[in-house]
Amino acid sequence: MDSIRNPFKTGVLWPNGQSGFNQKGGVGKTTTSLNLAAALVRYGHKPVGIDLDPQAQFGFIAGITARSGDDSIFSLFQRNRPLREMIQKSSNGIGIIPSHIELSKVDALYGKGYNAINKLNISLQAEETQGENRHWIIDCCPLVGVLSLNAIFACDGLIVPMSADYLSIKGDIQIQKTLQALERVLKRRVNRRYLITRFDSRRRMARDVLLKAEAAFGADVCRTLISENVCLAESPSLNKTIFEHAPNSRGARDYESLLNELIPDCPLGHKTPVLNGFLMESIRDFPYFSMRCCSNEQSGLIADGFIR
Ligand SMILES: Nc1ncnc2c1ncn2[C@@H]1O[C@H](COP(=O)(O)OP(=O)(O)OP(=O)(O)O)[C@@H](O)[C@H]1O
Ligand SMILES: [Mg+2]
Image (cartoon, rainbow, N blue to C red):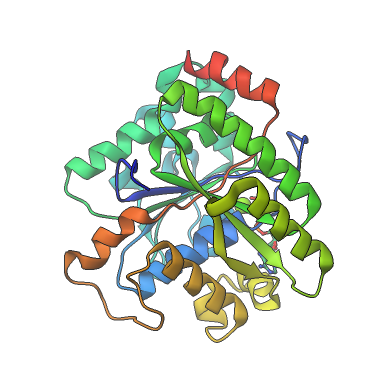
């Protein structure tokens, strides 16, 4: 991860399925965003989750909802409101910038030109100049558009989750092409790691998907697999992270392992607050987010329509 530009900005943007631009996601990006943020809290960090999905599920699960668009990340696009003014503290220790349904208007209202897709990047840079060493985890919507592109532009790396089924792998190959198209515009590599979610080792299909992912993405595939786990499925309805709902579950162990893989200096079971820069340094290698796929043609459109 030599080319990571900034140690503290990670995003979760991602796609699912193959060609369906409007297809529902459901590959586990909100689950991953929330539980990785929760794992960071266990290690003494104060991560901020930005809910960049108009479905507003990240904030909802964490118990934070916006009363209006102005109370949400929408106000960044509407009036350049500073991020720090929008952070709300959830009971589980994660700072949340909530979403609101008004966010779905962003493409129509502000969706043209480089400025529109660079807003989050500029705002995060402004936060850094304030000396705030936070981890930012951005949960994206399952569509390519202004919101997702803001996340890609702002972050140091992506986690691209894929559920362990055949459609997901096809979708992620399209994502790869999208990222390659964006890289030509950005003139840098977009760091990414592919994360297999909902893995059931008893299913041959899941094992096949893992092999195919390794063949397609090599070392970019996370070694950690997120298992299909009923506690992970239950916890959103209880407005809890997996560590609150079932700390000894397979799901909790998987997300803790993922954090340990992404931040190798974070030993399993170590939960004391980090008071020096040691762990904060190691977070440089924390590439967290996923993205929604689109076709080659759509990639071209993105490059032409939004960026140039
Ligand atoms: N490893 C898992 N085991 C069991 N259930 C899971 C797992 N990961 C996610 N789920 C469940 O799958 C559903 C979809 O997950 P999630 O909301 O995280 O997906 P998403 O990619 O954010 O979807 P969207 O694209 O709609 O935002 C949720 O009900 C969640 O609880
Ligand atoms: Mg989601």
